[in-house]
Length: 116
Image (cartoon, rainbow, N blue to C red; front, top):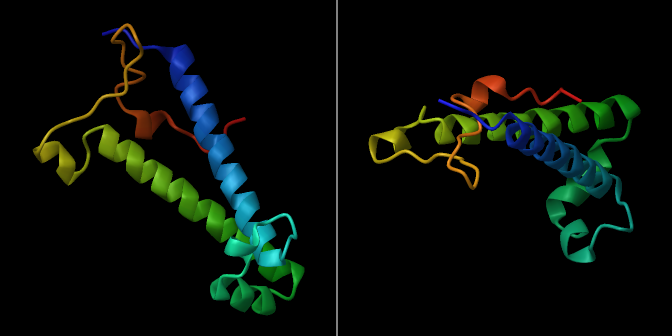
């Protein structure tokens, strides 16, 4: 079977960028960045964390936990796409290009969130 490596790498790059962007967003939100919309920044949960993360070490730990969780959910989604979840008992989905080529046989095995 033929796979579209170029599209796969672009897809993985987009996933890594999304993980990075959302991690940064969470960090900025918890630090009270004025660029974060008030409708989000005013969540009581952000305010509670804001008061608790009062050292650089705690802020770094928060950021790493957010990144880890986002990487985990990304991995889980790729496992589901690859047919490794209960959904595959119902039916399987495939990520294919406009020529019908799959991106990879096992996206969750090939995705490395730390790749640059």
